[in-house]
Image 1: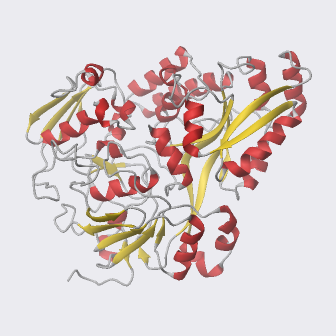
Image 2 (image 1 turned 120 degrees about the vertical axis):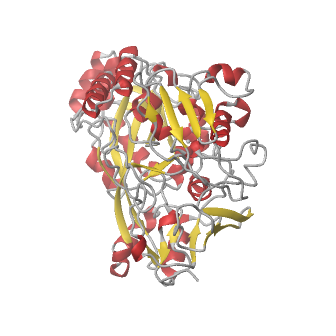
Image 3 (image 1 turned 90 degrees about the vertical axis):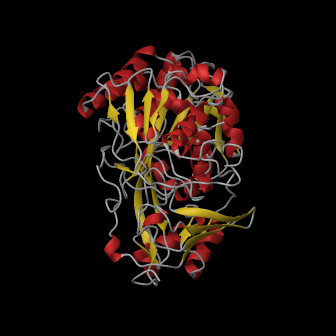
Length: 544
């Protein structure tokens, strides 16, 4: 998901997520995971299904929903997320980073005795190689922008030999990373898929023959048919994983995934409940104990391209901000959300709780259009995905805009086509969304609304640029006090929304269903599945 490519694919099969808690850190790994090892049973295979194949097994390149879940099974990162929260815990790291007083240098140490699935030891050289490879243009890492704050990243991209100047191997277990500016979100970047640790020199084969130090190993992949993963018997975090393996059936559309789960053929769906099945599933009393209602750290919004007339006119943008009834829109998506009051969602550092949005006011919108020089209205185009929930939202929003005098030529497109056109600045209006990569406001304001992303194929579909907003975000990233960071993010949000480059519509929520024989199940807000934590309720009390 680039991160939005991950979102593009993730949106078609929205990864499972739960309420993102305040971003803090936990000082332990192992049993501090969110489930109780005492209650776990052992053995068996968790059956899953996915609508599409994993596009790769390379964690630096993976952006799609199917491979995203597999990355967490096969690879370790220095840090991961604890249970059903957005709280970091230790994974391959012995402790959390030692950060220099100026906030620029991170010193990290690996646990002793970690091994890859091929038996080789995991060393700091492997970690350094994994991180440097993300910055090598030849890798085509979709999330490389999150790593470009490492000192020497630009020079390394121009001549990718050795390591960037900001990555230093201190000894076999110790790594030092130097940034160009303080960035409180960097610890979360290390917990993303691209932060996965692979063996030094394995870049040419990792995409098809993945070798990691994670809880599972890939044993078989038949494109269009299945993926099989076996428990890593030598995994450091014993007794996890509890199950013997995971089997994923590929090419199963969401409707059939529901049927398979109801029949007991699968335990977990890789796709969300499709809209046509939603009421049937959620009102079925037999499934009540298997349904989980969750909030997602996400924002659904309409972007207005400020480089394209008439959206270079602030009064036109303000008029559109008064066009929509958020509660009415949510009814179209089975209530899977809450009306947005700002751009940063709840559970993400920087969410203020203030209402920075405008409610529906047709007369005010018409008055603003007249003041903008369009007393008789105007015509424009809006681009949206051709899949749920956008296929339900876009036609209603077209009518809402018609009510204030704006005639919209609605173009519904395949997700990848949408991303290409909106990213290239060819979408006057773009209906889109964003799911948190990590629980800090920079992942929304910096990734979607900064001057740096107001470029072709960036994620700033509004092509909004305000250096004052960027400066406030940088101050938030440099802050060591969460209250100060929130103050700065709020300042940045208020400034951005006062100029109406986007209309926040709703914060996403999701209802999902799991099979009756999955024990210890919880959805994870950032990743989705946490397969090492689940067990089969028909398993054994001890491992045979």
